[in-house]
Length: 443
Image (cartoon, rainbow, N blue to C red; front, side, top):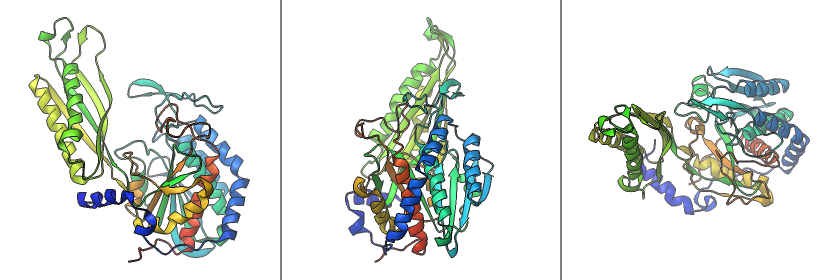
């Protein structure tokens, strides 16, 4: 984790354009190759859409993506690739495409898992899958767009396989489970299994709201670290009509929830870097006239600064235990260290953002802002120079400024963005390999 001074400099540079502030040797465009990629992408557009609809209609939660992984593996095998399944002891899939010429190795990553969300979007391929999560019945939905990520990388694999003889190097396709399951997630088990050995650079993308087909990129820090936490407040159960004979963990928990919000608002120097503490769920009690014995709550911590991250952990424990003690209760506080902050390699962005601009065309590719979302793409980009970018997928009839965001039951992505993503990932991979791999900044 980098120092607070480093991240302060990154945040300060947010208002600067990548083009003048970062320079690297640019990749010479190959119009004939770009046209061939466009032609091949257009030829499989219907297949990519069908894959997306199929995956969306059969969503699977993290570490349970067996059907999706089987679909991916079968496709990669049909392309003649070396395929590894159950990578890391989870439903991870790796496809290896060795080009017709020697060269570096590039990795392309897509995540495959869905969320415990009941879909409310009325589309023909709507998910009706149900499950029990944290003791509650719920739907399962690709509310974060991973169905699109997986389908786009499957399409990218087919386009690049058709260009095999022209590829100067090797492409690794990383289909990762459990991105939505911090603190460990799906990237780390795959890394432990050796998928990043020999990789010279790694690319990934994420869909989200915005003008259809537009892309956003950024050098340096792009997403926050993501830690999970759990607090259990232990009181003394009794009759709801006689609270003096009890220690009410619901009242104690309510005070803790309120006090946790003062960590960011009153106890951190936000001029260095932003941070967030969120209570995502709280549960206690079973009946209206019974004060329960305990209450549990869970949530997430997001930060860019390592010291702020440590401070939040310490203050959470202090606040919860001291408030509980003041009421005669006790509190168990567990913080799970999760994903590190994702950082795009400066030289990778400087060298390859023109590729995104060529692909985006009239829709545009522009420098974006940091996000408090977490991403275990950060695990991959810690081991090789990385470039993670965003693809906008809002249907044209909706306002990107007011449309439902990722993780909403109303989130939706337009199929027409799929071919844009395929073209982007394919061109990025080819430009990386054609130019000899990861670049260096020009002083």
